[in-house]
Amino acid sequence: MDWRSDQEINEEGLVLTYHHNSNHYPHYEVLTRSRMKMLKSLFTQMNQTVTPAKRYFATQRFAMDGLDRDKHPLVAEIAARVEQLLQAHQAFRDFDKMRELGTARQLDTTDLYFLSKNQLSQQYELYYCNPAEGIIELVNEYVECDWWERAFDSNLGFRDGDAALFVTANIKRSTKLFGRGYRHSLLEGGRMTERIMNCMQDSECTLSPVMTFFDKAVHSLLDIDGYYEVVLSSLIIREEV
Image 1: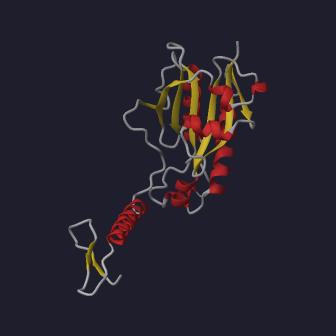
Image 2: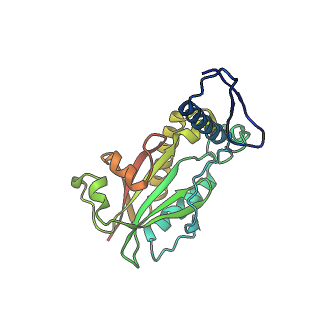
Image 3: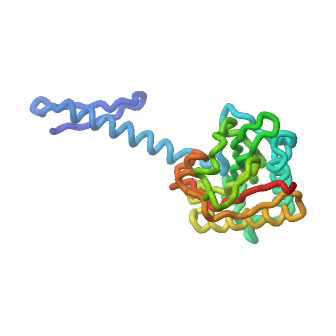
């Protein structure tokens, strides 16, 4: 097929022009159009501004200390203490240098997911939290009550009313923001887990780190892909009676 293409400025379609002796193959033209459309979509996504935090639209959003303590006392206490802890500590020694990256001004890029039982409705609910942005968003208010059987080993002795915390990282986002992804995510995940444990030492609830969770089940539960967004650590939260 002998052809030349001309992309008109004000049109999305690809204009193909054939000379008199050309062999015209319509299926090639369809294939070329679809590929050009795919490339345009890809380059558009690459040029978008990357922001540190995820966003769940059309959902309830709270400040770190704004979650209803009557509904989720454990999660509300942890979120409030984490916010105080992050305000009192500088993220890195080269914090000011990293701040110059613009969109990377929020350096704590790890995300938190809380699974907690609503004390009023007695229904497990899933919340997303970004400590750097200081927000908590409701992701799913109807989580099946047997979620822990799929996510954790049965030998852990999970009790009804126990909550779970998952520390996750978006490796692709970290790479675009900082020029590094996996190493930065592991450092941040360990640092965030340690700080959460430290800030809850004098609390009436206990936090226990867990290694034996099932990745695919947890990824499905949190609705993350497990490739670019991964779970770094998990903690079981139990209120002392």
